[in-house]
Image 1: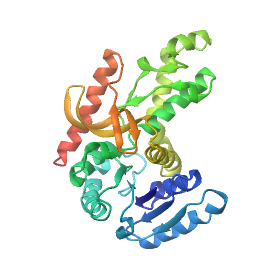
Image 2: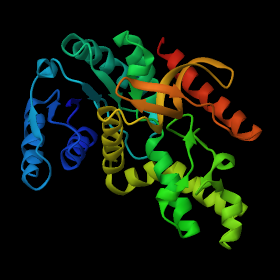
Image 3: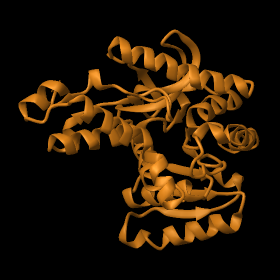
Image 4: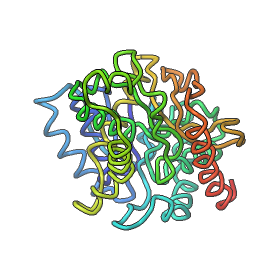
Length: 310
């Protein structure tokens, strides 16, 4: 499996590092507007390979992506502390208008993984520019938010996060929807498990976890100026699911014909991921309040996408 990464900044380089450590690819190539930065990042990561997996990590121009299986788009402006993800919308779209055609020129058969913010809008834009089936353009969406949600619930309940199944839906951003009503622990409803453990989900607990999940990215930005490790691991998780034709269910963002009454919007829902990309999308089993919140989240994304002409 050959994986190219366009954008060798914090996210792209950390994704490359995660891919190398996990052995997710045979080849990883970094491409960046600054060839010097891409070369330095590739060299640094390559020095970790002897204690990791046998992965070739290099850098090169866009033409180095010829024949690659997956291309990760991690290019675009960084979010600054205090900014929303939507604040960089127009600049991100402009960059993608230049980058995506070049990627498709050299790797027309590649599956595209979008990691740049605002990721839902950029996923929609990428699918439109690349002119490929929507299921072959996967935004990282709320994978990371979902992991945060499960981790917070696990801490509250005092159990392993791998036993918690709870999703964050909609926008990867301020309007995201924590699907409390559909959450399960070991196949049992979350609220029932919490009561049996003597750790009920009170309104205060729900509000605290919601705030922690929804604001996590902003807090990381305030503390160190960027996010990288979580999203880098999320990118590697998507690559693994594709490489192994795993049929894993992940909350990724894909351009969707209709959701919550709105047409043609890219947002995160539980989706089956395999070698061909998105194989199936599940309708979320959530309550009326969460359904309305999902509709509002979809409307936020749809409005932003329309704003830039897509």
